[in-house]
Length: 200
Image (cartoon, rainbow, N blue to C red):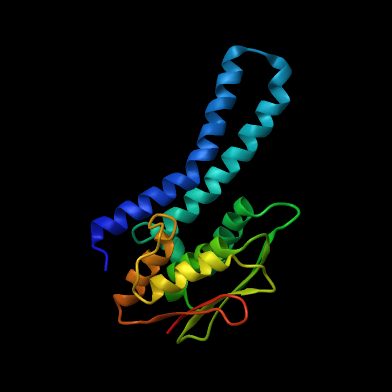
């Protein structure tokens, strides 16, 4: 359905979109520092601290999920920590996104990370994501979370081989579909009770 160039452009656009807001915040904070108004110093420190933390967590996540082979993908503890840190950048204090991570096989590491990102995209506000495998198949599912019906519908279209309305936003799912197909695996989306991605 998509060639490598389409997929590369979609992933690049999505990653850029997810980083640009915090990069802009850092830039604005630096401008305030250059102006020398020390009345804003506490605010500047807060902006720089928050934005740098978000950028660091997201960049590490994107590097592992979308990048070339990474030795960290062999370490289940690092995968879990990286996913949890990423989810903290899109949740908030009042509506956090919890992660239950029971991955046993590092072979599913990249797919699990992509699945976490995909499922998190469909959450309306907070919730819980469970990641689990039995050595043969991988499941990433929401538990007791409100979902965007429109986003779930678009995701379903992609899994069925149709084109979504916003290619870049759904780049993680397109990338997962591509990766899963290479070793001859299949990807299913279940949405009867919450949202679940099943790789088998």
